[in-house]
Length: 110
Image (cartoon, rainbow, N blue to C red):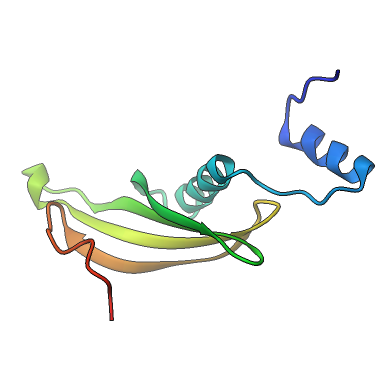
């Protein structure tokens, strides 16, 4: 049994077997984080949500937008990142900015 060492090897195996390429939820989140960091150079605090879509994944990522002293005054932001089933970036957008420790972060936006 051949060992997979890179994502290229995985893609080659999928292509050879006729299967479509798709990402696991964990790999989708990691890939979305990689794209966001590459584009924004912001420090990621964590992945706050993700959901499968017809075309891939939508991943919500919390980042440190503006470091302040004391750190309780930091400004954080939520970004929504859309990737396709192969891990390619489709879109990203900042959906919200807020102070660290804000208690209304879980409230639905309208």
